[in-house]
Image: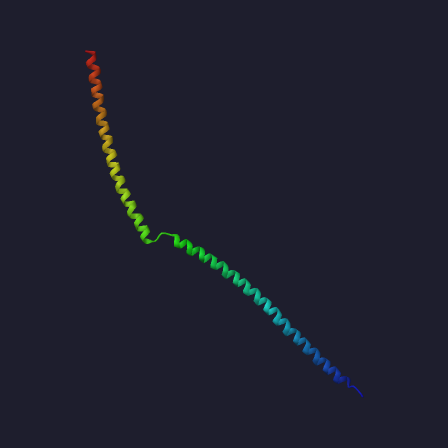
Length: 118
């Protein structure tokens, strides 16, 4: 029984090549799935952060006054401005009345003081 050494060398070369290719394919798929999982995890985290931001924004916008609310506030402010104008007019009239009363009281005091001196 003679063993052909060149045939064994060829089989060993082919077997070595197959093992190398198999290890490359395994490494490719193993690292590919890890990288993909990491990218999916990163993307998922980012989407979660965006979702939280959107929820916060939606809650903030829901709490803001609408167009009708702003219009109602404007109407109330205009009414208050009108009432303040009326209050200012009444205060001015009261001030003028007080000035006239002070003049009358002063004249009475002067009359009574001078009347006692005669």
